[in-house]
Length: 382
Image 1 (cartoon, rainbow, N blue to C red):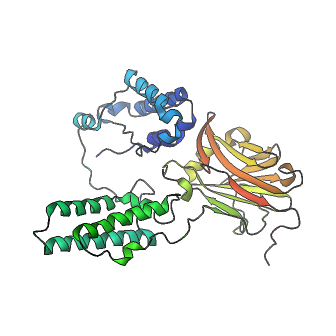
Image 2: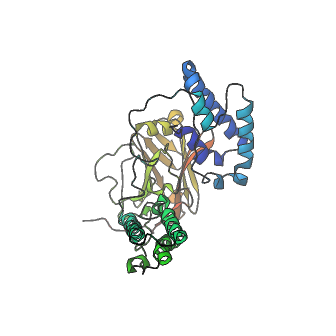
C-alpha cells in the first residue's frame, strides 16, 4: 500500500495551474529536495507517491498542462538526486513494513459523507440494492436463463455500483448536469429489469433529485458593526452577516491543504465588513506568512493585500483597516467603493506565496452583494 503525498499532489491539482510552467516546476523540484534533506538518513526506504484525481487538474492548466508536464518530466529525469519509479518498481525496491490497521475513510474529510448519509444518496443506494437483489433472485430461480443476457444485466449493475454517481447526489456538489446524471443512473438500473424481462418498478421512474441546488452563499439579513480586532469579540458580533462556505464550495476536487474555512460579509450605514475564518491554527499561521488579497469589485474596484509578517497584526491600508488575530477582519468605507455609498459589488479572496496564487475563493465568480442606499437598508432586529 502506497500513501499519497497530499501536499505535493495538491500543488499540481490546485496551485500550479495559475503559475508559469518554469516557476511551477522549480517549486516542485525544490519541494522534493526539501523532503530528501529531511529524510536523508532513510533514503533507501522512502518513496514519495504523487497521485492525482484523474484528469481533473489539467482542465485548469494552459494547453491542458502540456508545457508544465514536459518541463516537469524533463526536470525529474535529469536531476541526479531524484529517481522516478512506477508503483511496481517502488514495491520491488523497498522492503514493506507491517501495517497493523487502516482507518476506514476517504480522501475527503477522512469520511464517506460525500457518498452516503444524505437522503438522495440513500435513495440511490436503495434503488441499487433493490435492482441487485432482484437480479440475484432471478438468477437463482432461472438457472437455465440466457447467460449472455444475464451477463449484460450484471454489467448494468457494475456500472451503477460506481460510487461517483453519489458524488452528485446530496447537497455537497453542484452541476448543471445533475438531472442528466440522475436519469442516466436510473436508466442503468431500469435496464437490469428490461434485459431479464421483468417489469420496472415505478420507483425507478421517479427522479432522485427533488430539491433545487443549494447555494454556498447566504446573504446578510441585517446590518452589522463588528469590532475590527481580529477576534470573535462576542457571540452576536457577526450575527446577520452573509456567509460563503468554502468547505462546501470546494467543487469536484477537494484539497487537503485548504486554508480558508469561510467568508463572512456585511455592512452598516458607513462601512462594509469582511471576515475570514481559517480551517485550523496551522492554516492560520500559513496565511499570516503569505499575502492575503481581498478584492472588492464595485464602481471603484479595491484590492487589499494583507501580510501579517510584513504589515503586522493590525493596521490601516489605503481605503481600509484590518486586524489579523484568530480571524482576519477588514473594514472599508462605503464611500470608497461607490461615489454615492451604495450599489452592487463582488467579493473574492486570494492567498499568494512568493507572488503566486495558491488558493482562491470563490473559484469562479465573485460573491455578489447589493448594498442599498443609506436609510433604506434592512432594519435592525428588535
